[in-house]
Length: 432
Image (cartoon, rainbow, N blue to C red; front, side, top):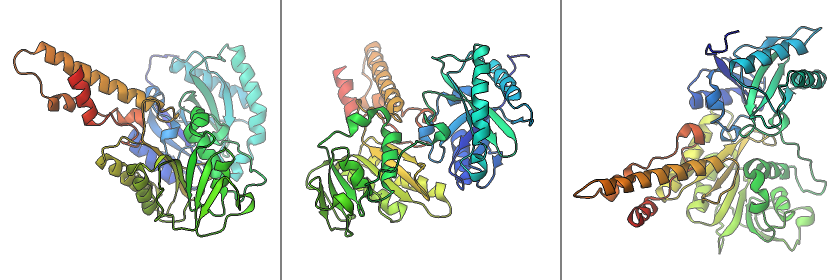
């Protein structure tokens, strides 16, 4: 086959059943493509027009409704009942050859998170080791490879063959973290915060959740999120007119205050603010904006209870409320909104004012790009001043060449990372 012929690829994204249209809308806005397969309650979306380069620039963490993002062929493999491994193997080998990929680090056989999809789990477990062995025999399993192969089975006896970038894809099978429900937690909502820590903090969890940190839990009762915090050694001020339950009552690590979460303000800044109040999304977004711009908390995790319709639009509206408030205050912002597995009709958000030392998995690349853009602009301006004879270039012109990092790298939010405030750039300009 001619491996130099350009190929048409497609995005395959997994989601919570019932949110296919929201995911399709997000993919179309991000990649300027049209979703070709949007089946209600199917648990996935297909959108043509993808490129291998774009896969290496897009973290699944930057997509709100996607659990996993895979680059796939535009048409699936039809599976015969007597032989399912060889058609998948040949399609995968051809796919890798056309895209000049020498090997993959592993191969996962997955399926939709639906009742019909879960019925395919037995077939997936049977196919996966055989396919992995066949790839190993072809010397296509490489421990240090950049990509992982994903084979997505559907109830219509088809298989979508694709690849995911190991550095940017979800690390969990089906894009679902496996988190056990603690026996002594007062409510299942504790799983939402546990998953949020896992998704948003990743490798920086130990650094960002240190014992003796201080946290405020707005809308704490019955205490699922407070329980999650104190079990990490964090002291919590729990704000709620309702009662806490279980071991949280009279706990030395918890200070329960019967107050309105929208009216409470801490006497001194805290490390964490978490919020799981049942309120309109825009009102929660405004509250988060207040905590960020006032400097009351270093890190914030919050839930947005979405309406039944126009959910993607409501997420964007909340993103704009928070982003514009911080922009007006002259503050850089890292903001991520994600529908977690343990969420239902809601989305969980993480927000912080970033620094160069920020180590969060979802903004590590963003901070690096922001620093590179700023430093390059400042150095270029300084060299130009030295070259030009006569009147030197003004500070305003120097600042004007500094641009925000490319949106396609940073994700959907224009506030994913910002260059330092202008006054910092001016200071660098004067001392360069």
